[in-house]
Amino acid sequence: MNTYYLNKYGSRWIVCDRDGTRERVTLETKSGKIVERAALFYEAFGNFGLVCISYKGKKIKVFMDTLLDD
View 1: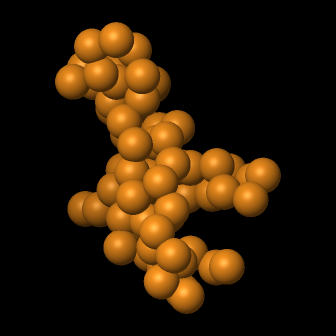
View 2: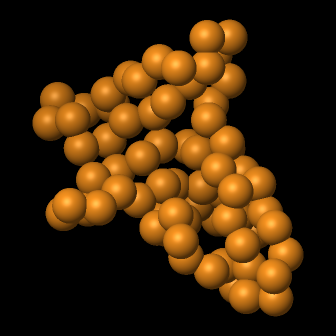
View 3: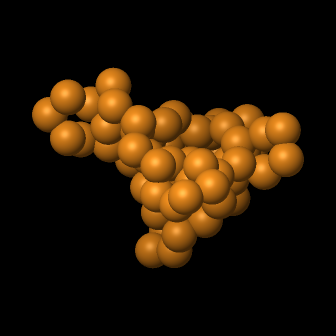
C-alpha cells in the first residue's frame, strides 16, 4: 500500500496498491445491501476521516460507518 498526499497540508490523500489500483471500501445501504466502491480520496474532518466515493453518478463524502440511501 502506498499513500499519496493531494495537498500540502496533508488533509487529503489517496491509498493505492503496488500496481496502482485505488483502495476499495465496503459500505452498506439502509436496506442492507452491500456496496463496494473505489475510494477516490480520503479527507481529514477534525479527528475523523471521510472517504469520497462515486455513488449513483455523484461524488459523495461519507464516514465509513454511514448507511447509504437506496
